[in-house]
Image 1 (cartoon, one colour):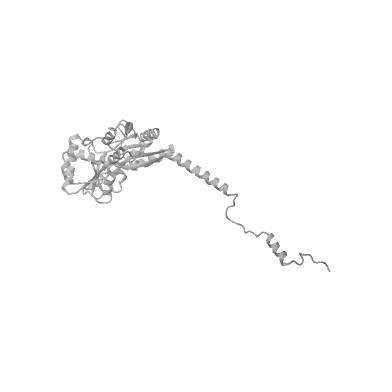
Image 2: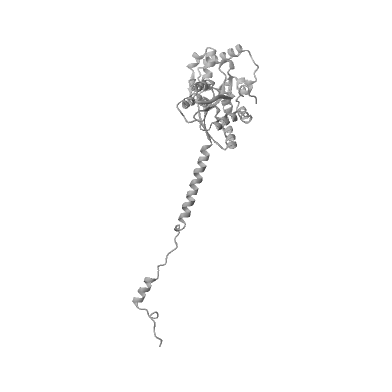
Length: 319
């Protein structure tokens, strides 16, 4: 009979010693191992550097522009073209020209000012520390009286829009002013109110006030107007049916031609020329880019966009 070795017949003491020597079995772990953690941290660090670099690149090429509210529709395609060409972002601060001027005077961090009023531009430039260089005119406009398409009663007038009014035969200054005066006298007899931008800071409202003062109707009209914060708000009151008529720009009427129609074109001689002007502000940290934007507004491509929305070219610039 063969002799038994300790392994053939283990004692309880030897089994306990084996159990102490055999390491416990470890189950696989799904968490990152220690040797992977440095690589993961390095990846996160590189990602953060790339993101911050992109942000700095984007912020270094951006313009903040204060723009008159009547420009907003035409500026959208112009902004897109400029952004694609120069890889820069454009931020628009939209409002009435007077309110935007006040923001600039209070120190708002803006690069450019686009005004619908030569008067507001002159007031800003009285403080020479606020602007860099002269203002540039890039568009002009006409002042019109517009109503809802169902608001007026004369059947012939319902078929007259802005293009038909523009093709009316030229009359003398006196005849135009008299026609204008007669129109508004008839309108006020109906006891209707008309919406205009607040003349204190809205260019369209100021031009309307000038026209009524020219023919001696301002006192009568003053009690029949609803003042709005900007010209687009005046248009909105007619679109939504709150009032039957508003005094707005021809370009505003064109953007809402599905709901409103031009009933009267204000004679040019009754108010100051409607000029859209832009100027670079001294707050800007990107003067070259800001000047490039003003040049872009006068380019043939931008002028075609303005023409599409019934803006007129600036004096001395043909399309």
